[in-house]
Image: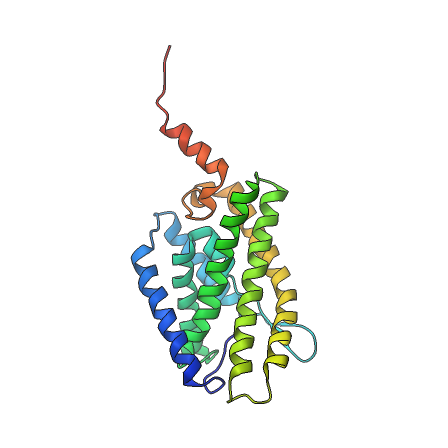
Length: 235
């Protein structure tokens, strides 16, 4: 998922950078974190920074890793999620040469925008349609959101590589299926990790999820907010 410099042309890298810059500007303006969420952002950023170095052997001579975009996006909101994933990608590129600087916009587009915003959108839609309560229904919607966020980010990277004249040995017919198949497996792991993180926070730190722009939409938090706002009536 970390495209190196020289794999895709500037005709792909520059438009991706422009889109990414637009999202950066919007995110810096929109991001709002509480005192409890700031250290959580740092913790999740460090967690997935390390997790991306754990490469899992998949089909053939390939490996892949979880991304964490869905977890950060759902817990802290997509704007904070984008900033967090950007920090991870910049540090990995500068310190370890994992991903290039010319294609940084492309990598952020895949890992920081698609993999963060798409799960949030899917979750909001599923929550409106089914209004799941705390339990298997909620965890299923979280899993599905994380799975498709990972998968679509991988497909986007496959399309970019497949269209690149700099990688003629990887056409669309090779790059897209390879990324889709491998990240269908990773997507399952991504979904499971995201569910476990959110389950843990629901038990230990529900106050953080209550302030989430995404998970805060859950009925359990809406009802709690209404109860807190209602005046106390004494007989």
